[in-house]
Length: 243
Image (cartoon, rainbow, N blue to C red; front, side):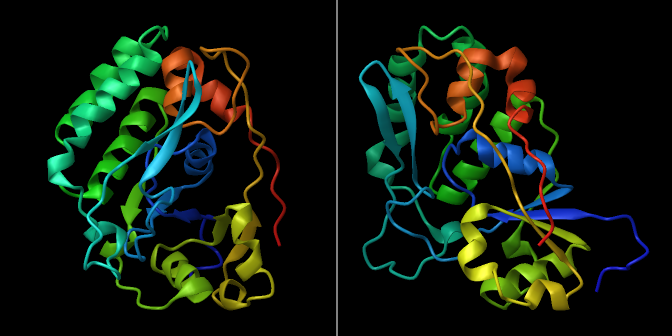
């Protein structure tokens, strides 16, 4: 159990999703350590393998083709990209078509193109490399670790509590969507970990292709407002209340 006299240390735990929205990075910015929950079951056609970018024709799904036949129970870190799909090449062409006119297209593509080009076979490595690339572009310092490297075998809320304990966290910052299974559960409290729900209001920035469209991949932020990206991202933070 964390030392009650120690300096509070906050933790967030999220699946490594594909090109996540700005709120994902804002949560990373809010905590001392961020855990990529990479050893849970892969969910086909979820945020784990797809996200949206803004185009002249509206939001467009960009999807990573993943091998699923005969792999029903595979985890995120086990999921493999279909090699014959040539996904990296196709994704870069799609991004170029959508953002070639964006003011910061060139520096952003210089940073992320090698990640797509060298995507290899692992979905998890691709997602985490892209997340870390966007952090670098934004200038967001983030201490990260993968849950698969932490010897915790419990499930659900108990798993979150055990991960907090393993990483010396006194405060767990949860996305609001986890309320359904965390409210009323005493695992975190029994572990001596305070629960807070992340509070965030989607900021806006200049976009291509008409009026502002929220909940696009954070690539939209860096493509259009790279120098101000961290300030814009942080403008959405709202005070959290401990549960």
